[in-house]
Length: 243
Image (cartoon, rainbow, N blue to C red):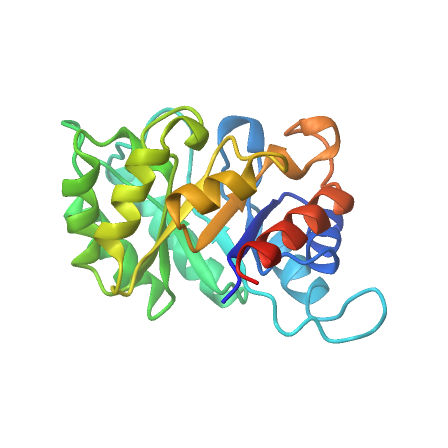
């Protein structure tokens, strides 16, 4: 099977371009410069509707739209008020037609917040969960992955291997991929991937899914639109790695 390509979208136009160029899945966020915050319900509904039909009028095979729920960028340690907002947002994201919820929460001592994650899973009411890069701020990545593997609803863990760029963490990523092998959870490699580096990275780590943000945007700028040419290049490279 070809490696799955997930692309960050921040607008309806981003979503259309990414899907037309070969993205298998979208992560919908706002405030990409802050690492992604919860988008509006109107944007979620518009993107879900937009990717159902491509520009040529051909169904886009139901490209999944995963939606981040993150109330602020101050930290991944949340108080009762934050959870009140987040759980409402999780329910609203489900009602708006999202495929999955992208979320993450930690305790003050750098562990996965079991109770908070369980509450989010309950609010998601059957939607899969991607645990985002809060994972990279935990004290022990392998221990944290074991914790997440204990939650059947967690189907992806987005990680850069604890480094600013995933390209600095090839050996760590390889270890995490082996740890998750055969489970219900996929290690989703993201942060710092580029068109030029992705082939070597996938070969070295054997990841089954990659996540692109700035690396497939105009000028490599996280505030710029998606560059369809770059998405198509990545798609072709990933297809070639498994041919």
